[in-house]
Picture (cartoon, one colour):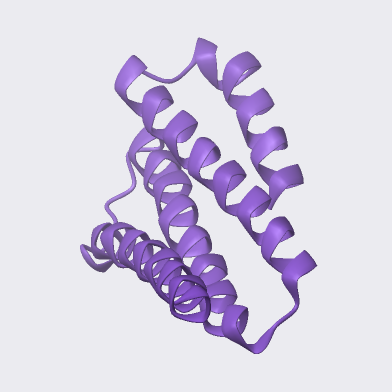
Length: 115
């Protein structure tokens, strides 16, 4: 995820900057940023290697893929003026919710272990 976010961020900053409107470029940058945060978080979670992190890891990974992936896909479809199914627009908030719940579950489990 970290590598993909770096590649997409670099691609957006150099190649897409010349062809995308500012609002679409901003969306791509947001997707790349969240993918980077999630990738770094998953690297940290992989160091913990406990049962408590399993559900969180899955939710964060799936959420980041859905959230950032749908942003990248929507940007490409809009730029190419392709009429896209409305379901693609619903994927972004679902991905965001998966990431949020993943972090909430992780925080709750860590807090529960310390209490």
